[in-house]
Image (cartoon, rainbow, N blue to C red):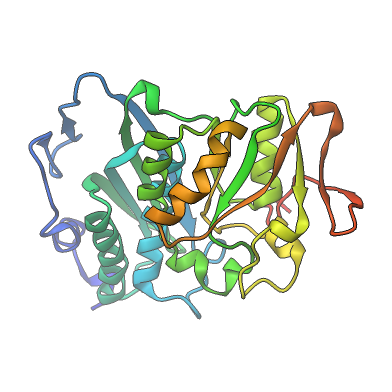
Length: 305
Protein backbone atom coordinates (compact mmCIF):
# COMPACT_ATOMS: atom_id res chain seq x y z
CA UNK A 1 0.00 0.00 0.00
CA UNK A 2 1.21 3.50 -0.88
CA UNK A 3 0.91 6.35 1.60
CA UNK A 4 -1.36 8.26 -0.79
CA UNK A 5 -3.96 5.53 -0.24
CA UNK A 6 -4.13 5.79 3.55
CA UNK A 7 -5.73 8.38 5.82
CA UNK A 8 -3.37 10.40 8.07
CA UNK A 9 -5.20 9.42 11.26
CA UNK A 10 -5.09 5.75 10.31
CA UNK A 11 -1.37 6.03 9.53
CA UNK A 12 -0.65 7.55 12.95
CA UNK A 13 -2.55 4.73 14.65
CA UNK A 14 -0.61 2.11 12.69
CA UNK A 15 2.79 3.65 13.40
CA UNK A 16 2.22 4.37 17.10
CA UNK A 17 0.39 1.22 18.14
CA UNK A 18 1.99 -0.55 21.09
CA UNK A 19 4.09 2.40 22.25
CA UNK A 20 5.29 2.18 25.84
CA UNK A 21 3.92 4.60 28.46
CA UNK A 22 4.75 5.17 32.13
CA UNK A 23 3.12 6.88 35.11
CA UNK A 24 4.95 10.15 34.49
CA UNK A 25 3.23 10.56 31.11
CA UNK A 26 -0.16 11.94 32.11
CA UNK A 27 -1.40 12.49 28.54
CA UNK A 28 -0.05 10.50 25.63
CA UNK A 29 -0.50 10.75 21.85
CA UNK A 30 -3.98 11.92 20.85
CA UNK A 31 -4.27 15.42 22.29
CA UNK A 32 -2.78 18.79 21.35
CA UNK A 33 0.26 18.16 23.55
CA UNK A 34 1.74 15.51 25.80
CA UNK A 35 1.48 16.12 29.54
CA UNK A 36 4.44 15.01 31.64
CA UNK A 37 4.83 14.99 35.42
CA UNK A 38 8.41 16.02 36.00
CA UNK A 39 10.33 14.81 39.09
CA UNK A 40 11.48 17.36 41.64
CA UNK A 41 15.20 18.08 41.76
CA UNK A 42 15.74 17.25 38.07
CA UNK A 43 16.95 19.57 35.32
CA UNK A 44 15.46 19.31 31.85
CA UNK A 45 17.75 18.66 28.88
CA UNK A 46 16.28 19.28 25.43
CA UNK A 47 17.71 18.46 22.02
CA UNK A 48 16.45 18.07 18.46
CA UNK A 49 17.92 16.62 15.27
CA UNK A 50 16.66 16.21 11.72
CA UNK A 51 17.47 13.53 9.13
CA UNK A 52 16.83 14.38 5.49
CA UNK A 53 16.93 11.96 2.59
CA UNK A 54 19.89 12.72 0.33
CA UNK A 55 21.70 14.66 3.05
CA UNK A 56 21.98 12.30 6.03
CA UNK A 57 21.21 9.00 4.28
CA UNK A 58 20.83 7.49 0.82
CA UNK A 59 17.97 5.04 0.31
CA UNK A 60 20.03 3.07 -2.21
CA UNK A 61 22.33 1.74 0.51
CA UNK A 62 20.41 2.27 3.76
CA UNK A 63 17.85 0.04 5.44
CA UNK A 64 14.60 1.71 6.43
CA UNK A 65 14.92 0.51 10.02
CA UNK A 66 18.46 1.96 10.28
CA UNK A 67 17.09 5.40 9.38
CA UNK A 68 14.76 5.23 12.39
CA UNK A 69 17.54 4.02 14.68
CA UNK A 70 19.91 6.80 13.65
CA UNK A 71 17.25 9.48 14.01
CA UNK A 72 16.68 8.68 17.68
CA UNK A 73 20.16 7.43 18.60
CA UNK A 74 21.90 10.67 17.60
CA UNK A 75 19.59 12.57 19.95
CA UNK A 76 20.29 10.09 22.76
CA UNK A 77 24.01 10.64 22.14
CA UNK A 78 23.54 14.39 22.71
CA UNK A 79 21.73 13.82 26.02
CA UNK A 80 24.39 11.31 27.13
CA UNK A 81 27.20 13.77 26.39
CA UNK A 82 25.65 16.26 28.80
CA UNK A 83 25.26 13.73 31.58
CA UNK A 84 21.54 13.04 31.29
CA UNK A 85 19.13 10.16 30.85
CA UNK A 86 17.00 10.26 27.71
CA UNK A 87 13.29 10.15 28.60
CA UNK A 88 10.65 11.57 26.21
CA UNK A 89 10.66 12.04 22.44
CA UNK A 90 8.39 13.50 19.80
CA UNK A 91 8.70 12.13 16.27
CA UNK A 92 7.81 14.25 13.23
CA UNK A 93 7.84 12.69 9.76
CA UNK A 94 7.85 14.26 6.29
CA UNK A 95 6.65 11.52 3.94
CA UNK A 96 6.52 11.34 0.11
CA UNK A 97 3.07 10.05 -0.84
CA UNK A 98 4.51 7.48 -3.25
CA UNK A 99 6.46 5.66 -0.52
CA UNK A 100 5.09 2.36 0.73
CA UNK A 101 3.42 1.97 4.11
CA UNK A 102 5.63 -1.08 4.79
CA UNK A 103 8.83 0.97 4.49
CA UNK A 104 7.59 3.81 6.69
CA UNK A 105 6.51 1.27 9.30
CA UNK A 106 10.09 -0.05 9.18
CA UNK A 107 11.44 3.46 9.84
CA UNK A 108 9.13 3.86 12.82
CA UNK A 109 10.00 0.33 13.89
CA UNK A 110 13.67 1.36 14.09
CA UNK A 111 12.69 4.29 16.29
CA UNK A 112 10.56 2.06 18.55
CA UNK A 113 13.29 -0.56 18.93
CA UNK A 114 15.89 2.03 19.91
CA UNK A 115 13.43 3.75 22.24
CA UNK A 116 12.80 0.49 24.09
CA UNK A 117 16.52 -0.30 24.35
CA UNK A 118 17.38 3.09 25.90
CA UNK A 119 14.25 3.67 27.97
CA UNK A 120 12.78 6.45 25.83
CA UNK A 121 9.03 7.07 25.67
CA UNK A 122 7.51 8.38 22.43
CA UNK A 123 5.14 11.10 23.65
CA UNK A 124 3.88 12.64 20.41
CA UNK A 125 4.82 13.99 17.01
CA UNK A 126 3.49 15.03 13.62
CA UNK A 127 3.13 13.78 10.04
CA UNK A 128 3.20 15.80 6.81
CA UNK A 129 3.59 15.11 3.12
CA UNK A 130 6.95 16.11 1.65
CA UNK A 131 9.07 15.61 -1.46
CA UNK A 132 11.75 13.68 0.45
CA UNK A 133 11.75 11.52 3.56
CA UNK A 134 12.39 13.65 6.65
CA UNK A 135 12.63 12.40 10.22
CA UNK A 136 12.84 15.00 12.96
CA UNK A 137 13.05 13.96 16.61
CA UNK A 138 12.95 16.20 19.65
CA UNK A 139 14.16 14.54 22.85
CA UNK A 140 13.84 15.50 26.49
CA UNK A 141 16.33 14.17 29.01
CA UNK A 142 16.74 14.57 32.75
CA UNK A 143 19.72 15.08 35.04
CA UNK A 144 20.48 16.40 38.48
CA UNK A 145 22.06 19.84 38.34
CA UNK A 146 25.34 18.56 39.74
CA UNK A 147 25.54 15.84 37.07
CA UNK A 148 25.28 18.05 33.99
CA UNK A 149 28.52 18.36 32.00
CA UNK A 150 29.17 21.24 29.60
CA UNK A 151 31.60 21.84 26.75
CA UNK A 152 33.06 25.04 28.14
CA UNK A 153 34.53 23.84 31.43
CA UNK A 154 37.81 22.13 30.45
CA UNK A 155 40.90 23.31 32.36
CA UNK A 156 44.54 23.66 31.35
CA UNK A 157 46.47 20.38 31.84
CA UNK A 158 43.38 18.17 31.66
CA UNK A 159 43.83 14.80 29.96
CA UNK A 160 41.78 14.34 26.76
CA UNK A 161 40.04 11.00 26.13
CA UNK A 162 37.85 9.42 23.45
CA UNK A 163 35.83 6.23 23.49
CA UNK A 164 35.90 3.73 20.63
CA UNK A 165 37.67 4.23 17.30
CA UNK A 166 37.39 7.12 14.88
CA UNK A 167 36.98 7.71 11.15
CA UNK A 168 35.24 6.07 8.21
CA UNK A 169 31.77 6.20 9.74
CA UNK A 170 30.20 6.77 6.30
CA UNK A 171 30.95 3.09 5.55
CA UNK A 172 28.29 1.98 8.01
CA UNK A 173 28.83 3.10 11.57
CA UNK A 174 26.82 6.32 11.17
CA UNK A 175 23.70 4.18 10.77
CA UNK A 176 24.37 1.47 13.34
CA UNK A 177 26.19 3.14 16.23
CA UNK A 178 25.37 2.68 19.91
CA UNK A 179 24.95 5.97 21.81
CA UNK A 180 27.28 5.89 24.83
CA UNK A 181 24.58 6.51 27.44
CA UNK A 182 25.71 3.87 29.94
CA UNK A 183 29.34 4.89 29.60
CA UNK A 184 28.54 8.57 30.09
CA UNK A 185 26.56 7.84 33.26
CA UNK A 186 29.52 5.86 34.63
CA UNK A 187 31.93 8.69 33.86
CA UNK A 188 29.79 11.24 35.63
CA UNK A 189 29.14 9.18 38.73
CA UNK A 190 32.69 7.88 39.13
CA UNK A 191 35.07 10.48 37.66
CA UNK A 192 33.21 13.72 36.89
CA UNK A 193 34.72 14.91 33.55
CA UNK A 194 35.62 18.58 33.41
CA UNK A 195 34.03 18.79 29.93
CA UNK A 196 32.35 16.40 27.48
CA UNK A 197 30.89 16.32 23.96
CA UNK A 198 29.76 13.65 21.51
CA UNK A 199 31.69 13.36 18.25
CA UNK A 200 29.08 14.17 15.62
CA UNK A 201 31.09 16.60 13.47
CA UNK A 202 34.54 15.02 13.75
CA UNK A 203 37.32 15.08 16.33
CA UNK A 204 38.90 18.31 15.09
CA UNK A 205 35.69 20.32 15.00
CA UNK A 206 34.14 18.95 18.19
CA UNK A 207 37.32 19.21 20.26
CA UNK A 208 37.62 22.67 18.72
CA UNK A 209 34.25 23.53 20.26
CA UNK A 210 35.47 22.37 23.68
CA UNK A 211 38.75 24.24 23.70
CA UNK A 212 37.37 27.41 22.14
CA UNK A 213 34.51 27.63 24.60
CA UNK A 214 36.81 26.67 27.50
CA UNK A 215 39.47 29.22 26.49
CA UNK A 216 42.26 26.61 26.34
CA UNK A 217 44.40 24.97 23.65
CA UNK A 218 45.03 21.28 22.94
CA UNK A 219 48.03 19.07 22.21
CA UNK A 220 47.23 15.69 20.65
CA UNK A 221 49.61 12.77 20.12
CA UNK A 222 49.05 11.32 16.64
CA UNK A 223 49.97 7.72 17.53
CA UNK A 224 47.42 7.57 20.37
CA UNK A 225 44.38 8.53 18.28
CA UNK A 226 42.44 5.30 17.62
CA UNK A 227 41.66 4.74 13.92
CA UNK A 228 38.80 2.48 12.94
CA UNK A 229 39.42 -0.18 10.30
CA UNK A 230 37.15 1.83 7.98
CA UNK A 231 39.37 4.94 8.25
CA UNK A 232 41.69 5.30 5.27
CA UNK A 233 44.00 7.83 6.94
CA UNK A 234 44.73 9.82 10.08
CA UNK A 235 42.81 12.72 8.53
CA UNK A 236 39.66 10.58 8.54
CA UNK A 237 39.96 10.25 12.31
CA UNK A 238 40.36 14.02 12.62
CA UNK A 239 37.72 15.21 10.19
CA UNK A 240 35.12 12.51 9.50
CA UNK A 241 31.87 13.14 11.32
CA UNK A 242 29.18 10.95 12.88
CA UNK A 243 31.34 8.64 14.99
CA UNK A 244 29.06 9.47 17.95
CA UNK A 245 31.76 8.54 20.46
CA UNK A 246 32.36 10.51 23.66
CA UNK A 247 35.18 13.01 23.90
CA UNK A 248 35.87 14.18 27.45
CA UNK A 249 38.50 15.78 29.63
CA UNK A 250 39.61 14.72 33.11
CA UNK A 251 41.90 16.32 35.63
CA UNK A 252 45.34 14.66 35.75
CA UNK A 253 44.62 13.35 39.23
CA UNK A 254 41.46 11.54 38.13
CA UNK A 255 42.95 10.45 34.80
CA UNK A 256 45.63 8.39 36.57
CA UNK A 257 42.97 6.15 38.13
CA UNK A 258 40.51 6.24 35.26
CA UNK A 259 41.97 3.79 32.73
CA UNK A 260 42.27 0.90 35.19
CA UNK A 261 38.74 1.43 36.44
CA UNK A 262 37.32 1.68 32.92
CA UNK A 263 38.95 -1.55 31.77
CA UNK A 264 37.29 -3.40 34.64
CA UNK A 265 33.87 -2.02 33.74
CA UNK A 266 33.73 -1.88 29.92
CA UNK A 267 34.99 -3.78 26.89
CA UNK A 268 34.74 -0.59 24.83
CA UNK A 269 38.14 0.92 24.09
CA UNK A 270 39.02 4.27 25.62
CA UNK A 271 42.14 6.24 24.64
CA UNK A 272 43.99 9.18 26.12
CA UNK A 273 44.89 11.25 23.08
CA UNK A 274 46.49 14.35 24.57
CA UNK A 275 46.23 17.24 27.01
CA UNK A 276 44.72 20.68 27.14
CA UNK A 277 47.29 23.47 27.14
CA UNK A 278 47.32 27.23 27.46
CA UNK A 279 45.19 28.90 24.81
CA UNK A 280 48.17 30.78 23.36
CA UNK A 281 49.81 27.44 22.47
CA UNK A 282 47.02 26.67 20.00
CA UNK A 283 45.52 23.43 18.71
CA UNK A 284 47.97 20.90 17.27
CA UNK A 285 49.22 17.33 17.19
CA UNK A 286 52.70 15.83 17.53
CA UNK A 287 53.95 13.00 15.31
CA UNK A 288 56.26 10.23 16.58
CA UNK A 289 59.31 12.45 16.01
CA UNK A 290 57.79 15.25 18.05
CA UNK A 291 57.13 17.49 15.06
CA UNK A 292 54.18 19.86 15.58
CA UNK A 293 51.28 20.19 13.13
CA UNK A 294 48.45 22.70 13.50
CA UNK A 295 44.89 21.34 13.49
CA UNK A 296 42.13 23.30 11.80
CA UNK A 297 38.85 22.80 13.69
CA UNK A 298 36.64 21.97 10.74
CA UNK A 299 34.52 19.07 9.45
CA UNK A 300 34.52 17.36 6.05
CA UNK A 301 30.78 17.96 5.74
CA UNK A 302 29.22 21.41 5.63
CA UNK A 303 25.49 21.87 4.98
CA UNK A 304 25.68 24.96 2.81
CA UNK A 305 28.77 24.25 0.73
